[in-house]
Amino acid sequence: MKRYEKFADQIAELIRTGVLAPGEKVPSVRHASRTYGVSPSTVFQAYYLLEDRGLIQARARSGYFVRELARHSLAEPETSQQPTQTTEVDVSELVFSVLASLKDPGTVPFGSAFPSPDLFPLPRLARSMAHAVRDLSPHAVIADMTEGNPNLRRQIALRYMVSGVMLPLEELVITSGAMEALNLCLQTVTQPGDLVAIEAPAFYATLQVLERLKLKAVEIPVHPREGIDLDVLAERLSSLPIKACWFMSSLQNPLGASMSDDKKRGLYELLHRHQVPLIEDDVYAELYFGSQPPKPVKSFDRDGLVMHCGSFSKCLAPGYRVGWVAGGRYAEQISRLKLMTTISPSVPAQAALADYLQHGGYDRHLRKLRHALEAQQASMLASAARHFPASSKVTRPSGGYFLWFEFPEQVDALRLFQLALAQGISLAPGPIFSATRRFGNCARLNYGHPWNAQSEDAMIVLGRIINSF
Ligand SMILES: Cc1ncc(COP(=O)(O)O)c(C=O)c1O
Image (cartoon, rainbow, N blue to C red; front, side):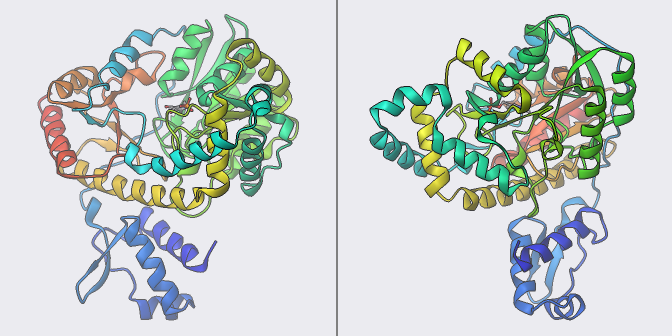
């Protein structure tokens, strides 16, 4: 990490924790340089970076100030209530009706699961696709179906290495997006009727997969910043025959929670004691703000108990449908199950991604994407503080592109969803994230699209509807 990035991270942390309040002047370049023992040019570069990230702004002849995003900022929600012990899952109808609402390109896409396609390097990817397909050997077109594209596997393993996980290539199974990887993992370690520990709230597709495979959910409460409640999980593991856990340890969807490294290690040790496998869904791993990537629980895995699932859908190439799982001791079974079902994701798509990862400037793209998302988060938070009731609560994730709102109790999120849709605004209502249809006054809003007058108007309309309950 460069010196100015480190310094920028320290200032960002002071802003995030409220030490430097909105509207407050950040130390002058001369003062910062003297106090922190860094050169003036390092301070300048750090301040340009923080400006790019939407955290500070320059005022003519006065210096830099923390952006006024949150003078009346909304509070943070608390850990979700402890749910019932186990439950059958039946949410698909509700989820499909919400997903159907997202198809109209005219709606403001606060309910979407993706960032704006304009934030992805699609023309550069297209060049990689043309290049890769031209060079694909007739042998590889067939052979790569079983093993996956060897160059892609190598590029993915290299990225694991950089984040501190030494991954044997045999562990890596390339899949049709993370969704296939997650499905295969769950099928590998469970039978219909088994219990699976999931988060509450959880990504709605998790619930749909459990429903399809006739598995029962054991919902574990999640703190909006610190992640799952390990005490509750420990108690459930001792009292129930849980066969697998499906968790997101970083940038959890929908809350955005990221567990500390210590907590991730603690989770691993707990699961290791009970010999319960972890399916780690880490599709937002590349979208962290700041300059240090979060470590996966997989980095603490000593004996192949963690199946770590990733994807290019959220950070590079939605629609290419290429993901993977580092399957630990289950890799071979996962791979066989894949060969018995979908066989392989598209070989040309894999080759295109391999070419892009090698030559396309992936890290540069990711840096730009993270900065754009961080600035857009600041805009949505500021707008919510202006237009939503002051008693609303909101998360402040350190990455990704979702905010989770908890509105006053009388707000019915499903009704809010209908009323907003009638005004051309989509959102993801809280109950689709729960096996027990809780979070009835909550919603997930996507800030992954460049902020503009239309976004601001949509927040005003949402605020009016919320106030009308
Ligand atoms: C938490 C989570 N896991 C998995 C997926 C699926 O990823 P993919 O598109 O790679 O199948 C998504 C996509 O919305 C997601 O949000």
